[in-house]
Image 1 (cartoon, rainbow, N blue to C red):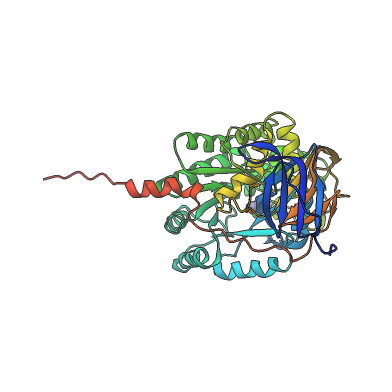
Image 2: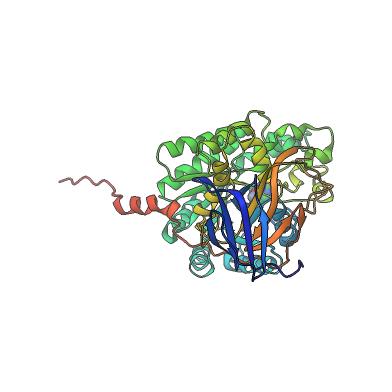
Length: 491
Ligand SMILES: NC(=O)NCCC(=O)O
Ligand SMILES: [Zn+2]
């Protein structure tokens, strides 16, 4: 526990950055909220106040990672970062809000799954968190559960898996039911877009051909497999007038499908992840099994070396909107469950701690993103889509004091020896990143200073996300109102 935290913090002389503008100002924080923003804010010396000098630094909204899997029971094991370790690592990297996924097994009540995740998370989180719910099966009961979750439990997003045949994959007809329900209750439909049937076929053929190592993983899931599912999901969402959010876009083909759909007026949003922006699929062909297996996630990293830059360009021009991590870590022992069969390697990689510095390095330092765009793709856009804006994602009077003092001059080298997650491997090992959080404030309390994390277990709160996000539903509601089927009157 840190010493009693200051109830008031004054951040002096930094460049305040929101998604729409940047300006020099002081920021005063009081009781967990942003109290005042202005030039040369004067303070009386009577109360306890901590002054942070932000000269030469940016003062930005805390990052929002909309895609994590902490302590996820998955593929016969449980991801190793629990909600304490995971949110602590998030804070270390400048992320002050995460949105995790409840993934109930087929047959389990969604509401029960939600309560299970709340139980796991509430006592451990060091920052605020929200929950998306995976819909892994379909029935009238599931529909009723979705309604309950939106009405009573602050959930506004539901994810469908088009992959993982035989476990959590849903069919097209189930997706139609889920999408119809999402539209009826004002929720955002999310998809993991890969064609699970062809993956299953490819996997069996690879194994039969004796390809049992991690290189079998990307070969069973080539870009076309992600592309086809992305296109299909967009079509289904369009036909049901349901807004769609495609999680972890990993390939140029899938990303371009989203760009094209947006240009044709579809209400579709795309998220990519830190790994796709900073790594690539060559690692699956590494001679070291442990190294290759550590990179196994789905959809896989792409071997095409131009992928990362192309995805960053699409974030820059607004065709993709958000960046997550799909943080779902397994240590080497867990990964070795698939030693003789790549299909058994637990899928997942790290990233929650590295996301913001990596996007700064690969986006801002390359000239692909300016600082306001950096804020948009790491924080504000997710806040708007998941309807927690401007409470989160903005430096504004009345917003939560989730603030990062970002040092553009810092320099560090990523290493498993130093990272805050429990994993024994870091897929970004050895990468040097310039720019990083000097100070991280969560709800008005300093959680990170000079690289030291002072996060308090259980201090984070569950974040209710309300239905009918204006950024999502403005167009959908109007379309529903004016839609008419064409009927020809015949004698
Ligand atoms: N992505 C991944 O490889 N693991 C986590 C589960 C999922 O999102 O598919
Ligand atoms: Zn995921």
